[in-house]
Amino acid sequence: MNKNIGIAKIVIAIDGPAASGKSTTAKLLAKKLGYIYIDTGAMYRAFTLKVLSENLLEQLLGDESRLRQFVEHTDVRLTDTQVWLDGRDVTEQIRSNEVSKLVSKISALKAVREKLSAIQKKLGEAKGVVMDGRDIGTAIFPNAELKIYMMASARERAKRRYAELKAKNADIDVSLDALEAEIKQRDEEDMNRAVSPLRKADDAVVLDTSSLTIEEQVERIYRLALEKINS
Ligand code: DC
Image (cartoon, rainbow, N blue to C red; front, side):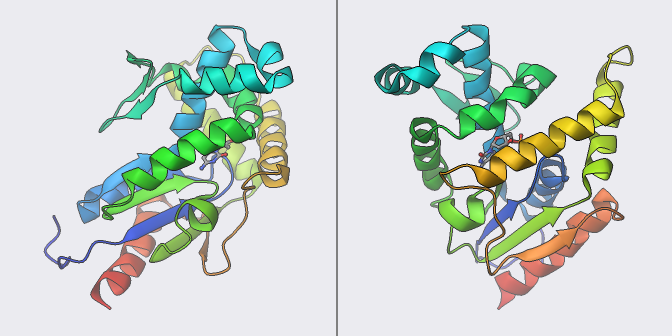
């Protein structure tokens, strides 16, 4: 743990649109503070992976009791660096483009949100957490001591996603324009859903990361966190 940090532990909520750099920043920030990092998007992605691999989309969208049953029988867990779905490690699989394209639809389902929100609230109870997502500062921890809203232009976010995908698989057949269109579509869906839409909390600090490096992003939030911890 950093010597600057007293015993006080706070909750740091980081929200923002797709590919705005939340998870990389949040992970590094948590490490610097000796806090736990919780990637709530990964939980929605795990649910989505199950819907895709079991080909359940049509069935679940039209049948509320089937959906409730499905949610009840789905176990999503996070450990330090891994994501588990029904006991299987799905850390890599949840990052596929197929999952990215469908996840907004699945995360808009009330039954899914209710289940994951309850888990997330529990995970943050002891404080000392950095949690990233879309509704952390507005719905999960409306009393978080520090709230950050990270954003960047859609083009910049598409460029980052493109570099990420290419780094994993140089032969991948994907265009920057298509990624930008997908990101905009996801923003649209995340911001306009009925339950806990993506929105900046009134008391969130806005961080535009279009021209910031990851290190600069981490450093800015780290300083804000120290102010809160020591106040
Ligand atoms: O952060 P991410 O791109 O991995 O998130 C994937 C999707 O999950 C995102 O498009 C919306 C949804 N999500 C959500 O609705 N609420 C959260 N707290 C986190 C993610």
